[in-house]
Length: 163
Image (cartoon, rainbow, N blue to C red):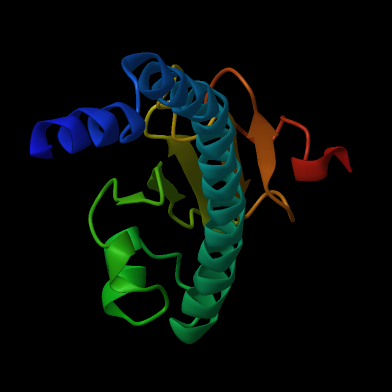
């Protein structure tokens, strides 16, 4: 009698292999749809952060310039250690939020005022794991960040947002 109960309940319990395979397939399809959308969201977030960081760098440069008696602009290290930017920007080419930041300085000479040129380039610009697809620039020669889809941006590129 015990054997009969076991056989009857064994057939009614659990999932069949086909049902389990269907559930795994559905999960796989959802992941395949979700991951590219998630990666695109990360790239967009990194790009928005890069624009905001460049605007902060520009503001920090103006503050540094005025604080230092208009003698010149500061390097990322000087801006970072001076409290004008947060410590993530210390170094020659810091990587922050998937972008590599760099600053080029031109000292004051004769009647020419000093200049700064700051770039934010994606750490990985192509592929499935790209950290961003646009290159950004801001400098003392432009009022707003500019962008380029293919190479490091400059003052000649269009402003962000197409304005």
